[in-house]
Length: 304
Length: 273
Ligand SMILES: Nc1ncnc2c1ncn2[C@@H]1O[C@H](COP(=O)(O)OP(=O)(O)OP(=O)(O)O)[C@@H](O)[C@H]1O
Ligand SMILES: [Mg+2]
Image 1 (cartoon, rainbow over the protein chains, first blue to last red):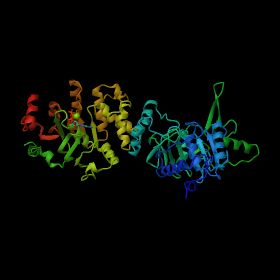
Image 2: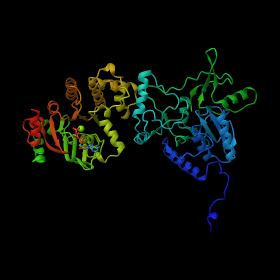
Image 3: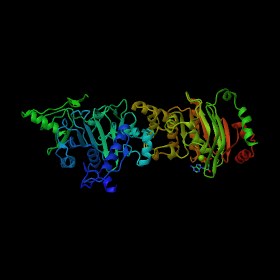
């Protein structure tokens, strides 16, 4: 028996771009991350044909999860048609044979930057969030080794302290996106820069969420039906962005998270941030019925 | 003669103290750092409501012993028990790191000589106190605010500066913030490592006054380390004299100062007089 018979034939590319050992490592790390919800797992972030900081962490997670039957949706701040979202989606489909979609309901994997779709995700779907900075303690403890010890000790006093001081100084909590949240009552994670509006969607969600930071080489997870609780004081309620009363100027939907477009006159108009939701509403209005699934927010109120 | 003298002296302690069960018991604590034997088989007993003074020259192991009491460090050998509800017979050095940290946050307060060790200099003073309460699980902003104010007030800290950062405060005020932080959770044990060293004499007297008043009002059990015999004399009920990592003499403060038995203590007391 020669070595040649034991090894695989040479191939120009591997399925799903990453080589088998890279995917094996990522799978192991994802399983670990699921086993300890919210706990950051280091991984050997590989090179992908994209610069670090542009969603390489999310891309590697997606490339590991994908199979030829997958249906991929990629969004960048809610939109499917941004250059980055479109390129990532096309790349994934080209190296895996998976099909592409803009529709949250038909996707099996949703890779996202900075948003969670408005339609409720199901148990058979996976949300992959791109994370620029995975360490919620970075602001209070620049030393990563000490920050890891603090996670191990569940020592979140300093994190709470910064929230306390924001209220003392400004009368309210200033943290907007990336709101630190306690996962499963044990580890605090940063939910990636999603707005506060989206954080409640992760709490007891039916779907699995993988959060992956390619530049920082860490990933963590929120398994289905797991508690995700933003750090708040019992007598200072958690407030989401006040978009409940805004209406999208193009689709007419209201009660969802909006993008603000400042106008010349000084005012602003709003467009729904989950762009495919807006498209579906426009299609329906123009006589091509397009199913909008159940949404986490109804009439601007969170109600899942 | 050195160690034997400790016990009779202890028996001469005030009857009020002797009737109570000790709050703190340390047995046979030893600790080496490389070749330096910082503590050699030290025993210590502290009764509820008393002030135990520890004196001794630089390097005699006072701070090391106090760090053990604060569970910041573990010894090479020895037992440590505190009479806390549900923990009476537990050797605290056997606790897991996380439990040790929680117990320490809830039941032990400490004031260091160097405020940089005890305070987050870039956070507000009230926040420094609130952090203690947050670690212990308090989640109401209004309660945090009230309790922080209360503890700072009890430490006679000027409340109009309560949101200033310690780095902007005077040394005496910094010590008061440390003290407020230490007493915020009404600890069973308050440890003070040279709390007034480095302050000028008038400020030192004021901080000592605060400590005395706190002790009188709240009956907090204190362990006070100082190499200033004057400080120990005004504050302590009982005193332990340490040298080269050993306790050479202990007893009621008045007795030790008036009638020192060990040659080293005699030398100390006479040098002071
Ligand atoms: N972390 C450490 N590493 C090495 N040696 C140490 C350490 N901590 C203390 N020591 C040594 O142990 C001995 C006792 O130190 P300790 O700080 O307890 O003395 P002290 O009685 O508090 O003195 P001082 O009055 O100067 O504060 C000293 O010789 C010191 O050098
Ligand atoms: Mg010392």
